[in-house]
Amino acid sequence: MRSRMRGLYATVAVMCLGPLAAGCGGDSKAAEPEEILLQSRSAPGPEPFTASTVTAGEPPALPTVATAPKSPSGGGVTLRTLSGATPGLYAGAQESASCDIGRQAGLLAADKRKAKAFAEAAGVEHSGVAAFLRGLTPVVLRVDVRVTGHGFHDGSAVARQSVLQAGTAVLVDEYGAPRVRCASGAPLEQPVAIRTAPANKGEPWSGYRADRVIVIKPAAQAVNNLLLVSVVDNGWIERPSGTEGEDDARPAVLPPVDPDEVFADLARTDPGGAADSAGAERATPEPSAAPPRPQPPAEPAPVGPAVPEPPVEPGVPVEPEVPAAPQPDLPADLGQGAPDPVEPEPADPGLSAGSGAGAGWDPVVPEPVAPAGPDQESLPEADVLPR
Image (cartoon, rainbow, N blue to C red):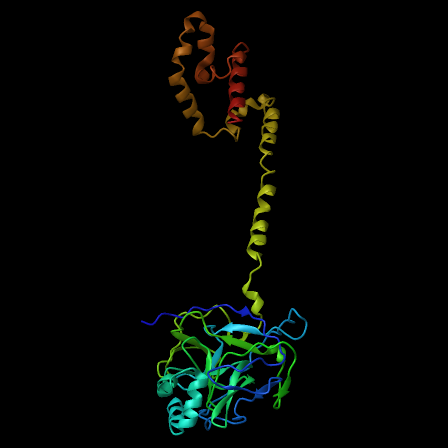
Protein backbone atom coordinates (compact mmCIF):
# COMPACT_ATOMS: atom_id res chain seq x y z
CA MET A 1 0.00 0.00 0.00
CA ARG A 2 1.38 3.34 -0.96
CA SER A 3 2.17 5.61 1.95
CA ARG A 4 0.01 8.70 2.32
CA MET A 5 1.49 12.06 1.64
CA ARG A 6 1.65 14.34 4.59
CA GLY A 7 1.00 18.00 4.11
CA LEU A 8 4.06 20.23 4.36
CA TYR A 9 3.71 23.80 5.44
CA ALA A 10 4.63 26.89 3.50
CA THR A 11 8.03 28.60 3.89
CA VAL A 12 9.27 31.95 2.68
CA ALA A 13 12.35 32.50 0.52
CA VAL A 14 13.87 35.78 -0.62
CA MET A 15 13.47 36.10 -4.36
CA CYS A 16 13.59 39.82 -5.11
CA LEU A 17 12.43 40.94 -8.51
CA GLY A 18 15.33 42.48 -10.44
CA PRO A 19 18.01 41.84 -13.08
CA LEU A 20 18.63 38.20 -13.81
CA ALA A 21 21.64 36.26 -12.71
CA ALA A 22 23.23 33.60 -14.92
CA GLY A 23 21.09 31.01 -16.65
CA CYS A 24 20.43 27.63 -15.13
CA GLY A 25 20.65 24.03 -16.37
CA GLY A 26 23.34 22.25 -18.33
CA ASP A 27 25.12 24.26 -21.01
CA SER A 28 22.08 26.46 -21.67
CA LYS A 29 22.83 30.06 -22.55
CA ALA A 30 21.67 33.01 -20.51
CA ALA A 31 19.06 35.26 -22.12
CA GLU A 32 18.58 38.98 -21.59
CA PRO A 33 19.25 39.37 -17.86
CA GLU A 34 16.95 42.33 -17.29
CA GLU A 35 13.77 40.59 -18.44
CA ILE A 36 11.19 38.24 -17.00
CA LEU A 37 9.13 36.50 -19.65
CA LEU A 38 5.40 36.31 -18.90
CA GLN A 39 3.95 33.14 -20.46
CA SER A 40 0.20 32.65 -20.63
CA ARG A 41 -1.26 29.22 -20.02
CA SER A 42 -1.73 28.04 -23.62
CA ALA A 43 0.58 30.15 -25.80
CA PRO A 44 3.71 28.27 -26.90
CA GLY A 45 5.85 31.36 -26.43
CA PRO A 46 9.05 32.24 -28.27
CA GLU A 47 11.27 29.47 -29.60
CA PRO A 48 9.36 26.39 -28.34
CA PHE A 49 11.00 22.97 -28.24
CA THR A 50 7.97 21.12 -29.55
CA ALA A 51 4.36 21.63 -30.51
CA SER A 52 1.89 21.75 -27.63
CA THR A 53 1.04 18.44 -25.96
CA VAL A 54 -1.63 19.91 -23.69
CA THR A 55 -4.85 17.89 -23.64
CA ALA A 56 -8.20 19.63 -23.62
CA GLY A 57 -9.48 20.43 -20.17
CA GLU A 58 -11.07 23.03 -17.95
CA PRO A 59 -8.78 25.58 -16.25
CA PRO A 60 -8.86 25.43 -12.44
CA ALA A 61 -10.79 27.93 -10.34
CA LEU A 62 -8.39 30.60 -9.12
CA PRO A 63 -7.87 30.50 -5.34
CA THR A 64 -7.13 33.49 -3.14
CA VAL A 65 -3.41 34.28 -3.02
CA ALA A 66 -1.81 36.26 -0.22
CA THR A 67 0.26 39.28 -1.21
CA ALA A 68 4.00 38.71 -0.82
CA PRO A 69 5.82 40.89 1.73
CA LYS A 70 8.32 43.57 0.84
CA SER A 71 11.91 42.41 0.55
CA PRO A 72 14.27 43.30 3.43
CA SER A 73 16.23 45.61 1.10
CA GLY A 74 13.06 47.46 0.07
CA GLY A 75 13.89 46.96 -3.61
CA GLY A 76 11.08 44.58 -4.50
CA VAL A 77 9.03 41.81 -2.94
CA THR A 78 9.92 38.54 -1.24
CA LEU A 79 8.43 35.75 -3.31
CA ARG A 80 6.80 33.02 -1.28
CA THR A 81 8.17 29.51 -1.65
CA LEU A 82 6.10 26.35 -1.32
CA SER A 83 7.31 22.78 -1.11
CA GLY A 84 6.40 20.56 -4.04
CA ALA A 85 4.63 18.24 -1.58
CA THR A 86 2.12 20.90 -0.43
CA PRO A 87 -1.46 19.58 -0.69
CA GLY A 88 -3.49 21.62 -3.17
CA LEU A 89 -0.45 23.13 -4.87
CA TYR A 90 -1.63 21.68 -8.21
CA ALA A 91 -4.93 20.88 -9.87
CA GLY A 92 -6.13 18.14 -12.19
CA ALA A 93 -9.09 16.16 -13.47
CA GLN A 94 -9.95 12.74 -12.06
CA GLU A 95 -8.40 9.98 -14.19
CA SER A 96 -7.33 12.47 -16.85
CA ALA A 97 -3.86 13.74 -17.77
CA SER A 98 -3.31 17.41 -18.62
CA CYS A 99 -0.38 16.49 -20.93
CA ASP A 100 0.18 13.74 -23.47
CA ILE A 101 3.51 12.38 -22.24
CA GLY A 102 3.81 9.77 -24.97
CA ARG A 103 3.41 12.37 -27.68
CA GLN A 104 5.90 14.66 -25.94
CA ALA A 105 8.51 11.91 -25.91
CA GLY A 106 7.82 11.15 -29.57
CA LEU A 107 8.23 14.77 -30.67
CA LEU A 108 11.60 15.06 -28.97
CA ALA A 109 12.76 11.70 -30.28
CA ALA A 110 11.98 12.90 -33.80
CA ASP A 111 14.45 15.81 -33.51
CA LYS A 112 17.83 14.76 -32.18
CA ARG A 113 19.14 18.32 -31.83
CA LYS A 114 16.19 19.38 -29.72
CA ALA A 115 16.36 16.16 -27.73
CA LYS A 116 20.04 16.82 -26.95
CA ALA A 117 19.38 20.44 -25.95
CA PHE A 118 16.43 19.33 -23.84
CA ALA A 119 18.53 16.70 -22.05
CA GLU A 120 21.29 19.22 -21.27
CA ALA A 121 18.85 21.77 -19.85
CA ALA A 122 16.96 19.13 -17.85
CA GLY A 123 20.15 17.54 -16.52
CA VAL A 124 19.47 14.04 -17.85
CA GLU A 125 21.24 11.71 -20.28
CA HIS A 126 20.38 12.15 -23.94
CA SER A 127 19.38 8.50 -24.18
CA GLY A 128 17.21 8.78 -21.10
CA VAL A 129 14.85 11.59 -22.19
CA ALA A 130 11.87 9.29 -22.83
CA ALA A 131 12.33 7.49 -19.49
CA PHE A 132 12.66 10.84 -17.74
CA LEU A 133 9.39 12.09 -19.23
CA ARG A 134 7.51 8.90 -18.37
CA GLY A 135 8.58 9.25 -14.74
CA LEU A 136 6.90 12.68 -14.46
CA THR A 137 3.33 13.47 -13.38
CA PRO A 138 0.95 15.74 -15.36
CA VAL A 139 -0.70 18.49 -13.30
CA VAL A 140 -2.01 22.04 -13.70
CA LEU A 141 -0.71 25.14 -11.88
CA ARG A 142 -3.26 26.78 -9.61
CA VAL A 143 -1.37 30.08 -9.24
CA ASP A 144 1.25 32.06 -11.19
CA VAL A 145 4.65 30.42 -10.70
CA ARG A 146 8.18 31.73 -11.22
CA VAL A 147 10.58 29.31 -12.97
CA THR A 148 13.65 29.17 -15.16
CA GLY A 149 12.18 28.29 -18.55
CA HIS A 150 14.00 27.59 -21.81
CA GLY A 151 13.71 28.33 -25.47
CA PHE A 152 15.39 26.44 -28.30
CA HIS A 153 17.70 28.81 -30.19
CA ASP A 154 20.39 27.93 -32.72
CA GLY A 155 20.66 24.32 -31.56
CA SER A 156 20.89 25.11 -27.84
CA ALA A 157 18.61 25.69 -24.86
CA VAL A 158 18.40 29.37 -23.82
CA ALA A 159 17.49 29.94 -20.18
CA ARG A 160 14.88 32.60 -19.40
CA GLN A 161 13.47 33.72 -16.09
CA SER A 162 9.73 33.26 -16.59
CA VAL A 163 6.38 33.44 -14.86
CA LEU A 164 3.88 30.76 -15.87
CA GLN A 165 0.22 31.68 -15.64
CA ALA A 166 -2.16 29.80 -13.37
CA GLY A 167 -3.81 27.04 -15.42
CA THR A 168 -0.58 26.10 -17.22
CA ALA A 169 -0.18 22.35 -17.74
CA VAL A 170 3.21 21.09 -16.52
CA LEU A 171 4.96 17.84 -15.71
CA VAL A 172 6.39 17.56 -12.18
CA ASP A 173 9.05 15.20 -10.86
CA GLU A 174 8.98 12.90 -7.83
CA TYR A 175 9.77 15.88 -5.58
CA GLY A 176 6.80 17.88 -6.83
CA ALA A 177 8.91 20.40 -8.77
CA PRO A 178 7.86 21.57 -12.29
CA ARG A 179 10.16 20.10 -14.98
CA VAL A 180 8.40 20.51 -18.36
CA ARG A 181 5.96 23.06 -19.77
CA CYS A 182 3.56 21.11 -21.97
CA ALA A 183 2.53 24.02 -24.23
CA SER A 184 6.08 24.32 -25.60
CA GLY A 185 7.90 21.14 -24.55
CA ALA A 186 10.42 23.33 -22.71
CA PRO A 187 12.39 22.00 -19.74
CA LEU A 188 11.90 23.88 -16.45
CA GLU A 189 14.30 24.47 -13.58
CA GLN A 190 14.37 26.41 -10.32
CA PRO A 191 14.32 30.21 -10.77
CA VAL A 192 17.41 32.34 -10.28
CA ALA A 193 17.36 35.03 -7.59
CA ILE A 194 17.59 38.60 -8.86
CA ARG A 195 18.09 41.83 -6.97
CA THR A 196 16.23 44.73 -8.55
CA ALA A 197 12.99 45.27 -10.45
CA PRO A 198 13.23 43.87 -14.01
CA ALA A 199 11.30 44.67 -17.14
CA ASN A 200 8.53 42.27 -18.03
CA LYS A 201 8.51 40.79 -21.51
CA GLY A 202 5.20 39.60 -22.88
CA GLU A 203 1.64 40.62 -22.21
CA PRO A 204 0.44 40.32 -18.61
CA TRP A 205 -2.85 38.47 -18.24
CA SER A 206 -5.87 39.65 -16.38
CA GLY A 207 -5.25 39.42 -12.64
CA TYR A 208 -1.47 39.19 -12.92
CA ARG A 209 0.40 40.73 -9.99
CA ALA A 210 4.11 40.32 -9.38
CA ASP A 211 3.60 40.17 -5.61
CA ARG A 212 1.30 37.12 -5.94
CA VAL A 213 3.72 34.94 -7.84
CA ILE A 214 5.12 31.95 -5.93
CA VAL A 215 8.17 29.71 -6.21
CA ILE A 216 7.90 25.92 -5.98
CA LYS A 217 10.94 24.16 -4.61
CA PRO A 218 11.55 20.40 -4.55
CA ALA A 219 10.28 18.60 -1.47
CA ALA A 220 12.88 17.34 0.99
CA GLN A 221 11.82 13.75 0.26
CA ALA A 222 10.25 11.98 -2.68
CA VAL A 223 6.47 12.35 -2.84
CA ASN A 224 4.61 9.08 -3.33
CA ASN A 225 1.20 10.69 -3.89
CA LEU A 226 0.31 14.21 -4.98
CA LEU A 227 -2.85 15.73 -3.52
CA LEU A 228 -4.48 17.70 -6.32
CA VAL A 229 -7.57 19.91 -6.38
CA SER A 230 -10.20 18.78 -8.87
CA VAL A 231 -10.96 21.25 -11.67
CA VAL A 232 -14.46 19.75 -11.81
CA ASP A 233 -15.77 19.93 -8.24
CA ASN A 234 -12.93 21.57 -6.27
CA GLY A 235 -12.54 18.36 -4.26
CA TRP A 236 -9.38 16.41 -3.52
CA ILE A 237 -7.67 13.91 -5.83
CA GLU A 238 -4.80 11.64 -4.83
CA ARG A 239 -2.53 10.94 -7.80
CA PRO A 240 0.44 8.55 -7.42
CA SER A 241 3.66 10.10 -8.69
CA GLY A 242 4.72 8.95 -12.14
CA THR A 243 1.16 8.15 -13.25
CA GLU A 244 -1.12 9.93 -15.73
CA GLY A 245 -4.39 9.70 -13.81
CA GLU A 246 -5.21 6.04 -14.31
CA ASP A 247 -4.73 5.35 -10.59
CA ASP A 248 -6.41 8.48 -9.28
CA ALA A 249 -8.51 8.12 -6.13
CA ARG A 250 -10.18 10.19 -3.47
CA PRO A 251 -7.80 10.45 -0.48
CA ALA A 252 -8.75 8.40 2.57
CA VAL A 253 -7.63 11.25 4.85
CA LEU A 254 -8.35 14.81 3.72
CA PRO A 255 -5.73 17.54 4.23
CA PRO A 256 -6.32 19.94 7.15
CA VAL A 257 -6.80 22.90 4.78
CA ASP A 258 -9.55 24.00 2.44
CA PRO A 259 -8.57 23.93 -1.27
CA ASP A 260 -9.39 27.63 -1.61
CA GLU A 261 -7.12 28.61 1.30
CA VAL A 262 -3.88 26.85 0.35
CA PHE A 263 -2.34 30.15 -0.78
CA ALA A 264 -4.49 32.55 1.26
CA ASP A 265 -2.35 33.09 4.35
CA LEU A 266 0.97 31.32 4.43
CA ALA A 267 2.00 32.93 7.73
CA ARG A 268 -0.96 31.23 9.43
CA THR A 269 1.07 28.03 9.85
CA ASP A 270 2.53 29.58 13.04
CA PRO A 271 -0.16 29.48 15.79
CA GLY A 272 1.63 32.18 17.80
CA GLY A 273 0.81 30.85 21.29
CA ALA A 274 -2.98 31.05 21.03
CA ALA A 275 -3.28 27.82 23.01
CA ASP A 276 -1.43 29.35 25.99
CA SER A 277 -3.82 32.30 26.27
CA ALA A 278 -6.78 29.94 26.11
CA GLY A 279 -5.27 27.90 28.93
CA ALA A 280 -4.88 31.01 31.06
CA GLU A 281 -8.54 31.82 30.54
CA ARG A 282 -9.53 28.38 31.74
CA ALA A 283 -7.43 28.82 34.88
CA THR A 284 -8.99 32.13 35.97
CA PRO A 285 -12.42 30.81 37.07
CA GLU A 286 -10.90 28.46 39.65
CA PRO A 287 -9.96 31.13 42.25
CA SER A 288 -13.42 32.69 42.00
CA ALA A 289 -15.05 29.35 42.83
CA ALA A 290 -13.21 29.04 46.18
CA PRO A 291 -14.74 32.02 48.12
CA PRO A 292 -18.23 30.48 48.44
CA ARG A 293 -16.80 27.71 50.67
CA PRO A 294 -16.39 29.88 53.82
CA GLN A 295 -20.19 30.26 53.97
CA PRO A 296 -20.94 26.93 55.71
CA PRO A 297 -19.97 28.42 59.15
CA ALA A 298 -23.02 30.64 58.78
CA GLU A 299 -25.29 27.60 58.82
CA PRO A 300 -24.68 26.71 62.51
CA ALA A 301 -25.84 30.20 63.49
CA PRO A 302 -29.49 29.43 62.80
CA VAL A 303 -29.08 26.33 64.97
CA GLY A 304 -28.68 28.56 68.06
CA PRO A 305 -32.12 30.10 67.83
CA ALA A 306 -33.57 26.63 67.48
CA VAL A 307 -32.40 25.75 71.01
CA PRO A 308 -34.69 28.17 72.86
CA GLU A 309 -37.69 26.62 71.16
CA PRO A 310 -38.20 23.86 73.71
CA PRO A 311 -41.59 25.43 74.53
CA VAL A 312 -42.76 23.68 71.40
CA GLU A 313 -41.50 20.50 73.01
CA PRO A 314 -44.87 18.76 72.86
CA GLY A 315 -44.24 18.55 69.14
CA VAL A 316 -40.89 16.85 69.53
CA PRO A 317 -41.71 14.54 66.66
CA VAL A 318 -42.50 17.63 64.60
CA GLU A 319 -38.80 18.64 64.40
CA PRO A 320 -37.93 18.27 60.68
CA GLU A 321 -34.21 17.92 61.26
CA VAL A 322 -34.70 14.75 63.33
CA PRO A 323 -35.62 11.95 60.91
CA ALA A 324 -37.47 9.07 62.45
CA ALA A 325 -35.06 6.43 61.09
CA PRO A 326 -31.66 7.78 62.29
CA GLN A 327 -32.85 8.81 65.77
CA PRO A 328 -33.49 5.30 67.11
CA ASP A 329 -30.26 4.07 65.53
CA LEU A 330 -28.11 6.66 67.28
CA PRO A 331 -29.30 5.89 70.83
CA ALA A 332 -29.05 2.17 70.15
CA ASP A 333 -25.43 2.46 69.07
CA LEU A 334 -24.53 4.85 71.85
CA GLY A 335 -26.37 2.71 74.40
CA GLN A 336 -24.29 -0.31 73.51
CA GLY A 337 -21.11 1.61 74.03
CA ALA A 338 -22.38 3.47 77.10
CA PRO A 339 -22.52 0.68 79.75
CA ASP A 340 -18.97 1.43 80.94
CA PRO A 341 -19.62 5.04 81.94
CA VAL A 342 -23.19 4.23 83.14
CA GLU A 343 -22.05 1.57 85.69
CA PRO A 344 -21.86 4.16 88.51
CA GLU A 345 -25.71 4.22 88.45
CA PRO A 346 -25.96 2.70 91.94
CA ALA A 347 -24.32 5.86 93.26
CA ASP A 348 -27.14 8.01 91.85
CA PRO A 349 -30.41 6.20 91.28
CA GLY A 350 -32.04 9.48 90.28
CA LEU A 351 -29.99 9.60 87.09
CA SER A 352 -31.02 6.17 85.96
CA ALA A 353 -34.64 6.87 86.69
CA GLY A 354 -34.59 10.21 84.91
CA SER A 355 -32.75 8.89 81.87
CA GLY A 356 -35.60 6.76 80.57
CA ALA A 357 -35.62 6.45 76.80
CA GLY A 358 -32.95 9.19 76.61
CA ALA A 359 -30.29 7.08 78.39
CA GLY A 360 -28.19 7.08 75.25
CA TRP A 361 -27.97 10.91 75.22
CA ASP A 362 -26.78 11.36 78.88
CA PRO A 363 -23.07 10.93 78.00
CA VAL A 364 -23.42 13.60 75.28
CA VAL A 365 -24.85 16.30 77.60
CA PRO A 366 -24.05 15.40 81.17
CA GLU A 367 -24.47 18.94 82.60
CA PRO A 368 -28.18 19.45 81.89
CA VAL A 369 -29.05 16.19 83.75
CA ALA A 370 -29.59 18.11 86.99
CA PRO A 371 -32.71 20.00 85.73
CA ALA A 372 -36.09 18.35 85.53
CA GLY A 373 -36.74 15.47 83.17
CA PRO A 374 -38.47 17.59 80.51
CA ASP A 375 -35.35 19.71 80.00
CA GLN A 376 -33.25 16.61 79.55
CA GLU A 377 -35.40 15.49 76.65
CA SER A 378 -35.28 18.87 74.86
CA LEU A 379 -31.49 19.23 75.09
CA PRO A 380 -30.77 15.99 73.35
CA GLU A 381 -33.08 17.10 70.56
CA ALA A 382 -31.13 20.35 70.30
CA ASP A 383 -27.93 18.33 70.03
CA VAL A 384 -29.34 16.30 67.20
CA LEU A 385 -29.99 19.42 65.09
CA PRO A 386 -26.39 20.25 64.26
CA ARG A 387 -25.79 16.67 63.23
